[in-house]
Length: 152
Image (cartoon, rainbow, N blue to C red):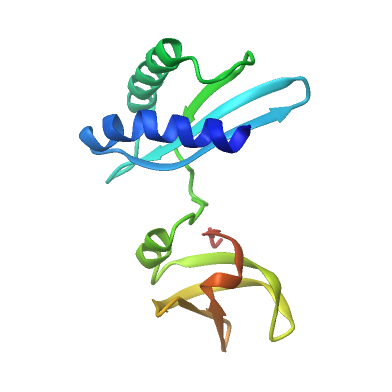
């Protein structure tokens, strides 16, 4: 059910977001405790602000009221993906070259399932991550999750 809701919401809002130069990063429909949450993460060149989130929230709320794709009561949240933005698509990974990333894999690669460091390259479906003096080649097909990593 949550996958169908996610897909329906994405299809419903994507044209509006693209028209207004926003990028849809992710949509989540989750149950936490007794409450359901529809979370929409958006970004744009230079970052989004509170006014952007409010504008998008109003549009989404109106569309959801019209189309009513969610049978349960839920809370709508629209926000930035944050500093540790998830890298959901291969295009997101390609944009992250030169930045610090945190990657987990479905199975060990060279004995490791977690990799953190600078993403040196992403070519031919392989990520090359520099961690200290070591370089790790991670096949994109083995990636369970990836996000930007903040280094302090």
